[in-house]
Image (cartoon, rainbow, N blue to C red; front, side, top):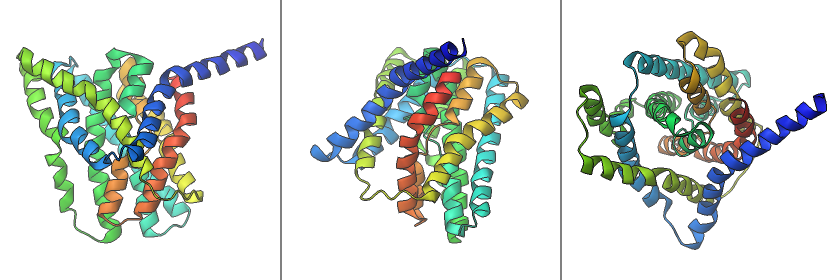
Length: 310
């Protein structure tokens, strides 16, 4: 009987890997191999997604979302506490390993900035269905906002720089698009059909473009050097994140899709944006970029397991 249950669990994990994880990784692999052969510029793709597709997606989803304000507040509070907790965990792990100030700050960057956009959104929709898209988008916007502030602040601390760059987060196109989206949502004014269709079409392009862009960016990494710190930082992100989310979520009374979506977003690998911040602040960019790549590959295992049981 026990062997039957074991085989059943293994079969369930394989199906999740095949049907949920594989489609996402195939698009990343396409970008990885096609990028250099077609001489695709990752920066041009990422900027197009950043300035066009992501804002359109956020506007389209949030303007028509029907989430109770009290529930939305609990979701935002949950993700704020979770992000602070995982950032603190990255800091403590760096200190416990007696790492330098720079490496400890890099641990915080990797632990905090999860790939909740081009990884989190498609995986959650594939696993939980279209009804989870709105919750995943709310977490996506909130996580990017919070992560940006934490990561820029920590990078500035490590380099003894100013924190004025923190305020540049308010110029993020997705957050700018959030303002009119919330106006339409709160006032119950119907979005004009042409605008709804336009933002919908552009938003649909976001996920495949971002996944292929991720593959192209990975193909541009000149050298991959895996060491203990890369593994440790990735583990904090991939295991520490969801474990902390599981421990924290009961205090906010989240259940059903909003609970599962929040935990899954906390389990995503490190985001390329962490590499961009590291590069901007000269904070061990090669280490951070290598860890972003390794955590993405490492997540094939961790996400398959977590997606099976969530």
